[in-house]
Length: 153
Image (cartoon, rainbow, N blue to C red):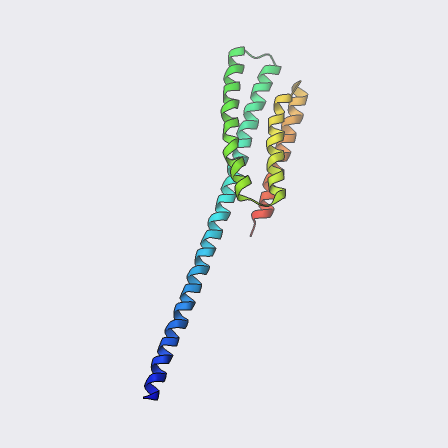
């Protein structure tokens, strides 16, 4: 009788330990999947912002190059409309970075890249336009480097 009770208790204890291990492994797998999903969302936010800033920087340069070189007013209007469209694409990934990335260096680099890109509209002549474009490119590259530093496993 004692042997039977010990066998049943051993079986129950084994089932309990097995269940606890399975629960722990499932929870660890969920946590790892969530971490991968979060990292992917962070990478997407940075990539989308970098892409949007590149498009907006190109559009801003085209508008001000056309304006400063005396292009046809209709062409300038078309280019300005395009720059408004590209500017609108910056907002969503900028917000996602603020929501998903706690690293202050990445957040600051994103803000600097956005500000540098928007500063292109302050160009007063072609040389100034080129300098502002180069500053925006450098800020863009710095954002990518900071994000890479933060997001590299």
